[in-house]
Amino acid sequence: MPYAFTEQGIYMLMTVLKGELAVKQSKALIRAFQAMKNYIIENRSMIGQHEYLQLDG
Image (cartoon, rainbow, N blue to C red):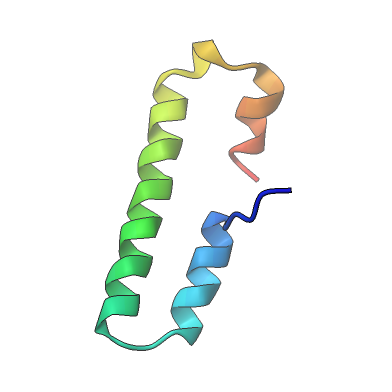
């Protein structure tokens, strides 16, 4: 199994890690997750309904 963070996991990490660099990195990761989600939503015809519905979870 690959090691990966979820959007919620990154948010939880933001509440624990302190420092300017940690905050910048966390915010950048949140923006990346949002951009990925927006891209998937815009191109939802390329994925199945089941996978699309999991985005709202």
